[in-house]
Figure 1 (cartoon, rainbow, N blue to C red):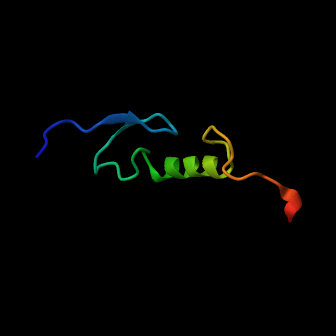
Figure 2 (cartoon, helix red, strand yellow):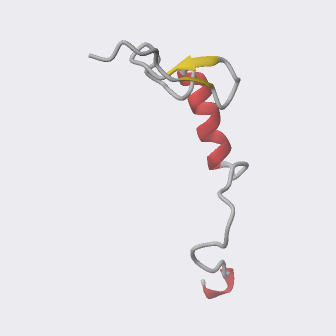
Length: 62
């Protein structure tokens, strides 16, 4: 068994310290709330991965 300390990181939403262990089931987030806030940011396209769109956006075809 490994006696090393778990990895320490910051919650991406609120910057609270989180350890990568079973004690933090929402890791890398500190809580379900921060996890849902981040999901909402992706859903509203406030978070995006840089690069070209995979498919061309052309609304005229419909």
